[in-house]
Image (cartoon, rainbow, N blue to C red; front, side, top):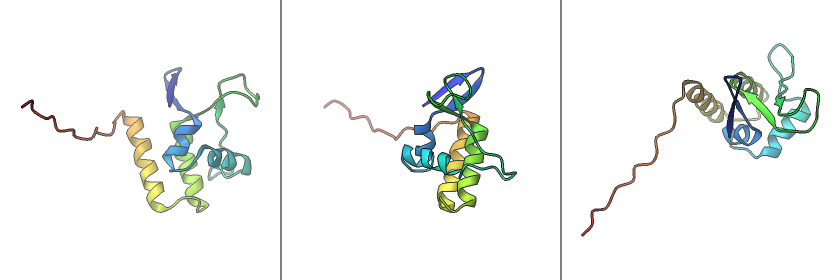
Length: 111
């Protein structure tokens, strides 16, 4: 699920989990365990839908957060190379506004 706040697309925890083929508890575990770490050592902390420094509310991840998370879990070996490249492709598609084509459904003619 995505929402658009202040012209920036943000994504909820369920989207992040789906991006890597995982469950939402995996996303929470990674966050609590400090796995979401950028190359410079800073933690990737999602925005919340409530005031800053609150522990309640929905987590909101930006496209840059998604790229940083993909890099972090790839570097730590938490995902495969295929999952990493698939995630980066999906992130790029979101950034460009490209959607996956719907499956072709053949229409049947009335007899």
